[in-house]
Length: 110
Image 1 (cartoon, one colour):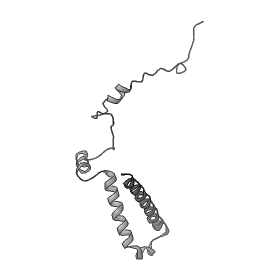
Image 2 (cartoon, one colour):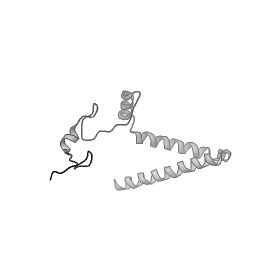
Image 3 (cartoon, helix red, strand yellow):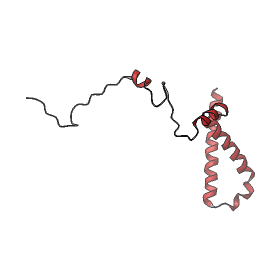
Image 4 (spheres, one colour):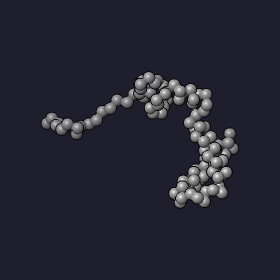
């Protein structure tokens, strides 16, 4: 007796070829690792900044360091902030402490 299967109810066969999958071109990128950081109005400027100034992590780290200095200098005036504003600063400080801990852990390992 022949086997009868409705559409979308049969066996699924998929060919997986890691070599062709790794080397397929996506857009204008080739390679084993491709990172798409989203749309940019000026991709060439962004690429130059990443190459000459620093990675996104380095840029964010420096901004965090600068904000920490400003928060510490403004500490006496922070009493004028609302509860939500104080909470935002507290969350930021906790995040910075966690980041500093991870950095020191990696520096000890190096």
